[in-house]
Image (cartoon, rainbow, N blue to C red; front, side):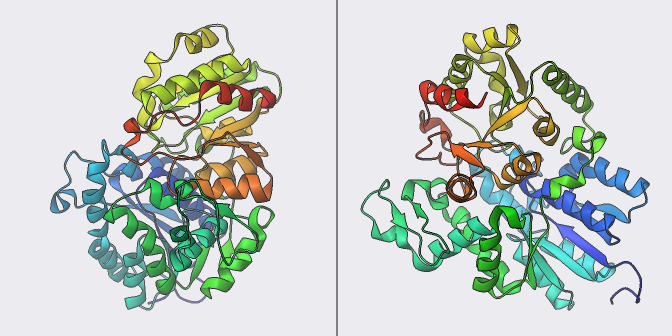
Amino acid sequence: MQSPENAAPRVYFIPFPTPGHALPMCDLARLFASRGADATLVLTRANAARLGGAVARAAAAGSRIRVHALALPAEAAGLTGGHESADDLPSRELAGPFAVAVDLLAPLFADLLRRRPADAVVFDGVLPWAATAAAELRVPRYAFTGTGCFALSVQRALLLHAPQDGVASDDEPFLVPGLPDAVRLTKSRLAEATLPGAHSREFLNRMFDGERATTGWVVNSFADLEQRYIEHYEKETGKPVFAVGPVCLVNGDGDDVMERGRGGEPCAATDAARALAWLDAKPARSVVYVCFGSLTRFPDEQVAELGAGLAGSGVNFVWVVGGKNASAAPLLPDVVHAAVSSGRGHVIAGWAPQVAVLRHAAVGAFVTHCGWGAVTEAAAAGVPVLAWPVFAEQFYNEALVVGLAGTGAGVGAERGYVWGGEESGGVVVGRKKVAERVAPHG
């Protein structure tokens, strides 16, 4: 049953439960609600606690928006520890049970759709069962992709044509066929090289399930960044692409941006204010911001090399020792502590108000893993990227940013880390290269 004529269209939004997917989906739901839609954001309870504040503020301001929290069926999937978001998993061994638990949300979501009918569903592209539930009720469904159309086009070409199977070594370049530009990669830079195992391969192949199920694509992107690939992906899949990004722009300058992704945590606003106050004392464009997202876990020796490189560069820096490396912050090299003591460095352990930091006038460059959210947030703030991909499709994003869009430069990572096996990955970028790449951008 659809909404009566002239009523606000009812739209459900359901992301994969990890910050890189849930954060932009929350922004998207608030964007739709600000344009008159009746939006329901479907989250696991842990992500509802993180993101509910921004939704509540939007609702208080008059938007029709709410969170519907689902309990992750962890026990049925053999998942212990109360983990309801991928960034909370202590080891890769739990990724399989976590994926099973996420798929067990399917009947809960289908029941929600039956009880509270919608006019459309915007589903995460790696959750094709959400599209299936909508299709059974004849509800239009739109896939929200966790990345941009360039990376989607590259991944699709690799899966269809497998040019990587024709090279003799991991570092031999090959041409990705069928793209508007000549794009060359190596096997060491492919998503499948850093996401091994049956569960991860299934994760990548789900894009074809989503492609068959979706009515169209909703993408956190914009024409100036990748117009040719928005058009290319639309042509290749035969489905319309709606580029609605950067969705982070829905966040104003108040609590939404200061607590984005960490609502409800008592220290979030305090930590954010402290970081911005430190930036206030620095000259314009003089600070390099360094952050590798919520899932990256560098080996200890790489953390030490990164720290030594930042300290040796001579530039001001804000370094988020976050994600899986947050506990290493007190053990950083002495040169990092010296830089902090001198006022040249600021280290944040755990979470940072990234959009607010990038918007600050003192920030002149962003060392990032090239997750798509980070790429679009940097573009929205007009901050050039220093690309250091780590895993998944991040090397594809680097190829766009560095090779085609011209909105950044590479730090020099020739390979990534196997997700969950980072401790055996050694040093990818040494301190000398870090200092060389960072110094001209301070």
